[in-house]
Image 1 (tube, rainbow, N blue to C red):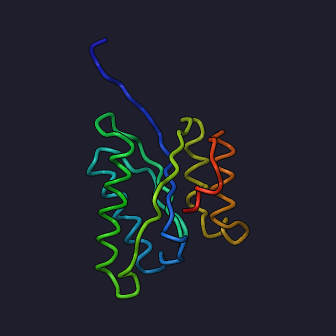
Image 2 (cartoon, rainbow, N blue to C red):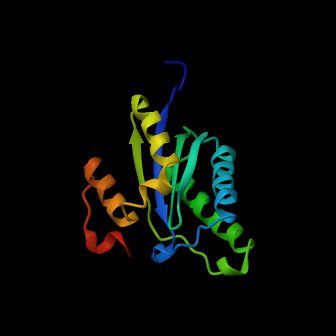
Length: 150
């Protein structure tokens, strides 16, 4: 085979440290754009970036040139440094250690886009913790809840 052909849709989820509600307007939209820019720079084409006050969702194409762990390291470290420069209220901003990353079937991409687009509405009914545990269950990820939130 002469070519390396890859198409991996990845849904990434991570939260603020202690799930603090620090992602507020007007920083929210700027942060989403900034995270999308990091993805683009790393050849991980962003499809949608969204979230809520205490967490982020990113749907992107994982590049064949970068490991998922490296993508997350770049996303979290650069955005954390950047956001601290935006306002005094977020000068102590940190991301929680860890993340969730879930492969997405190409047939389900629009469903994930819709889901990320409707985060504010979705979180009127469900907390991030409930949402995240549902993702783990849906994707059959084994976990120990004692360590999920630390």
